[in-house]
Structure formats: C-alpha cells, structure tokens
Length: 348
Image (tube, rainbow, N blue to C red):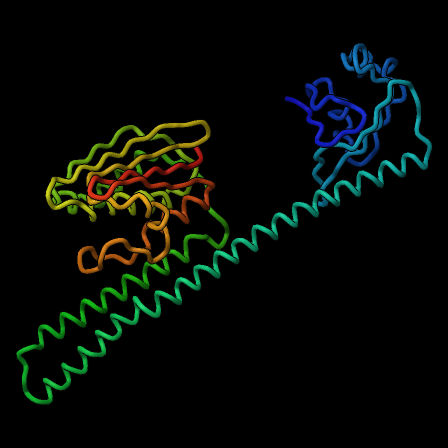
C-alpha cells in the first residue's frame, strides 16, 4: 500500500510506501496526537529509509483526521529535519487545525451530496415535464378514441343499427390496452430506484440472457429469428434489474425487424478493465445515427405507432437502470442496416 499527500507545503514528495509512513502509526491512535521528538532514537523509526536517507526526518507530529462518525481517514502532520518538541499551545493549535481540516472535508462531501441531490431533482423535474407532455398527447388520443367510440356505440344501440358494434368495441379495446401499456411503463420507470437504494450482487449475465431468450421463445419462433449467444461476463448489479435491461434491448431487436429478411440477433460479451461489456447486435430496421441519443429519451419513438406498437419507455428504463449502477448504454445504427447496443456494467 501507499500513503498519499493530498496537500503539502515544504516537501516535493507526493507519496511514500505505507510501511515507511509515520502517519500509518499516528492513524492507529485516533484520539491523540502522536509526537516523535527525534526519530533517530525511536525504535519504530530509527531504521526508516525516510530517516536514514532523504528527507532525513527527525521530528514528526501527526494529528489524526477523524470523521464525525469516528473513522480515521488520515493525518495532519508536520515534520522537520532537526529534533524538536511541541509546547502546549502548539499541540492545541495542531489539534485545532486537524478538526478544521476535517470539518472542511465533510463540508465538501455535504456540498457534493447536495449537488447530486439537486441534479436528481432537476432530472425528476425534467421527467415530470416530459410526463406532462405525453399526458397531453399520447394519453389524450386513446381517451378521445374511447369517448368517441362510446358515443357512437350509444347512438347505434339507441337507433337499433348494430352493424358496427364490433368495430367500436375493437376501438375501445385497442385504446384501453394502449393506455394500460403506457401507464404501466410510466410506473416501471418511476420504480427503477428502490426505496432502500440499488441492490448489488454478482450476476452471471449469460444466465440472465438465457432467461430472457427463454421468456421470449414463442416470439423468437414466430419471427423465425436466429439467436447467437456467446459467453458473457459477470457483473455487479441486481439480477432482476439487469433482466429488465437485456429484455428491453433484445425485445426491441425482435420487434423492429426488417420484414424482408430473417431476423438475426447476436449477444456477445467481454471484460474491459473494470467493466463487463455486453453487445446486442441485430439486422433489423435500424435508425438514423443522429437519433442514437434520442432513443433513450422517455416517450421518444422513431417509428409510427401504427407500424410498431409501444410506449417509447423501454430504452429509457434500461438507461436509468444501467446508470443507477454506474454503467452506461450506447447505440449505433444505420437506417435499414440493423442496430448495435452496448451495455457497460461494473465487472465482478
């Protein structure tokens, strides 16, 4: 291990091995100041390379930096090349400075936490604005269809003309189903954040992908799709949540298929540094590359509802889940030539 100097005056060194560090001893006494008047006669440090060689430390005084919850994070220390001692006023001053440093650090953490909370609030406000927009359009359309169909149905029943009943009932059923799907997607998006925070567990992504494919087996057979599933890495995430992510992406690959060719979907994976990477590629209808960010926006759909049913929420939900775990999701495509989705998650 190493000791890092986050702030320093009068010394050019930025780090030292932990086994040479005076502070490694001082931090073990979080309730008291550690003073070494002359390191050459202290059995703990007399053979220390920092004493024997440059910077030839003789005097050391270190005050532990302790959080309000009692955790010692480091020290505020002073060193000198000549032996010396501290009087009572100097001891009090060094202790006071260590308390002040810790207070400033905790203030910085608090400000950072408030900034994150403010960003979350801003995103929630943006989501609310988007919801207001969709409620004024996407929800009003099926409601209007329901109202019109019910009104026409009443008129026909009252007049005894029953020839169009099936048509009106189909409109009512289709509109009601669309509203249910949209409301369900909105609730799913809102519930991505668990009340007690995200759950972290080691998940074999290959097993989750196989579960997704098994759940969609009938849809795969009806589409005549060929599936290529390679070995996938393990990631640290909630298994239920990552199922949702892969299911949304694979489901889109099946839904937005090109009617002129048999669907082919490949799911491949690799580990890249600290990331578990999963790539889902298809030969579907694709999309214009200029929309590769827009497709992750809530309620954003690039195709007409009349051609492909959906709420425009699936990829927004996937993005929110992935980012909650410190990961990312990206898409690349050329219209008419298929799509490639890349999901990066913390590797196990």
